[in-house]
Image (cartoon, rainbow over all chains, first blue to last red; front, side):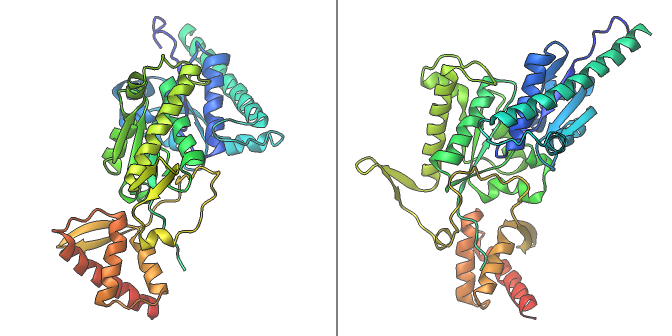
Length: 144
Length: 247
């Protein structure tokens, strides 16, 4: 990597799940990472732009590593990033995350219950660690 | 007995996570799906038009669809038209904010007061469009909907859970290809319709084909010019289905 090239932002792409709780968890986790935990290292990308084929969104996906979060097995976020020419560093399925944190049973669609919020927090913490590793690799690459 | 899906209205929200207006589309759609018109509406996640199957892409052909967009990109309207069918109604939140002279919404994760007002205004506009699409009018005296049009298919529907947003993700709408005037045409809902008619013991005679056509036209747009060719194709396809089932 060119040392003068600014560090890439990690794209966080949640699914656009509207009718299911896990979709809401995916979105909430993405907000926690991009607004609270790692705001300067990450960027939230709306899936609808990739569906439309928006040039700026496609360009962002082509030029930055992505972490996808899917609410159901259809894995729309992961499929759309791949379809748009992106590379995925880590893909998360909320159901799998829930299996690791069974004490946090999420409920609610428009608004998550407390357990749903806690599950989103737990997922966001995992994502933040991945972002840190990616940034460390990037910085190491730049220095080396 | 197979229940045909009731004639419902599809609501496709852009759900744009990057903007407060995207959150407004999602919350307004959910309000309509869960509270205002739970029995009359259904939704699908926008990405399924690409990431899903043929049944998902048939969504806007099967249901008259209202697209709800947050911004001028109009991702929901354009993607719905590109991959499924032209939306019957397109709503844009920023237009409604302007029309209702609301303040700027803020907080894509937690909306401010102006954002919540915009959710209400958007939900009201969706409801108005749903009722219009279903051929209904609001009786201001009784405060109830006046149902103007009831079809046989509508009456056979099983009641839905009125507190849950009806999400079509992964359910897919069954489609079948038939040859109409030498061209392959996709008819949405046809496998279910054939199954229902066959189970009701309806022979493939002229009267049955009339009934079939009436039911098919609920879910498919067929012009009167094309109807004779469709009729022939449907008669042939149903006769084949009938004898295969009875074998």
